[in-house]
Image (cartoon, rainbow, N blue to C red; front, side, top):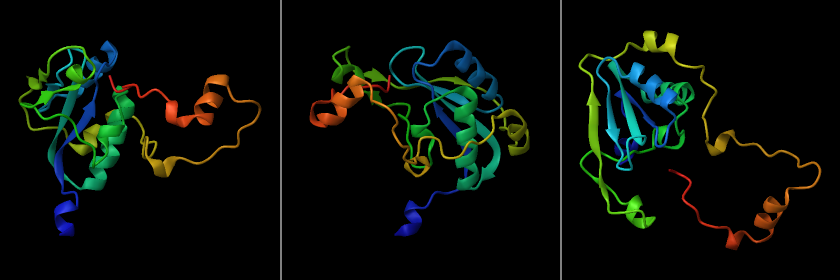
Length: 171
């Protein structure tokens, strides 16, 4: 059923700040007021997800645009901020430390909550950075002509894509 897959109006924006700089975490902290919360994603104190509350439900298209602006404002990862993106829910385990050989699975927990009814879209509109369009989406990519010689490391990767190291760059 197509209605089950159609995004619905919502009251939260979200951002992935795993490994974020302290200034970006501070920016997020200012935006948590009122009604937002953070989730420790299970890999230490600098790895968190922020949820910014809105005072009323807004259309999915508006959430998508506000999420892009939130990503630009706090320099977070744009990938999980798309409407079809996802973050680890509180109460689940992050198995990435085990997969990477860095330790046991870590519990994902809610770390900070702020009482309140959420931001109005009008107030957020005055605060968030400009919308630069769909950050990191395939539709935004256009080919560029390569001029000159490619760096050796890029040329070798293109020549032998099967042997590119599969490194985890999400941390």
